[in-house]
Length: 99
Image (cartoon, rainbow, N blue to C red; front, side):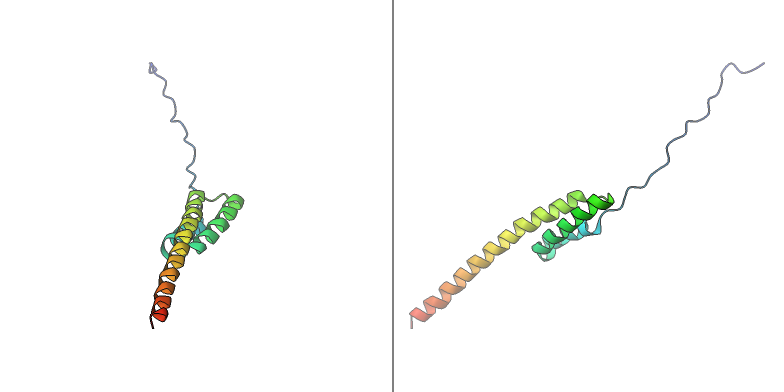
């Protein structure tokens, strides 16, 4: 006597596709923008965006963060240098005029 239930074969799952790698320039953009020299973060962020458009790698968000943080921190550093030069100049010129 045959079984009353017909067993179906297990469904075939699609094969696992690994995610594309993260662009190295995008990682460098974030690290250099926050840690080393912000203008390099801007440069590497732009290069990463160009490469990501061509290759389809991941990391567009990192590239954007590197560009934005690079611009913001570059502006802060620029303002710091201007203010520092103003203080240094006022100290130098106040010492010269007092003699």
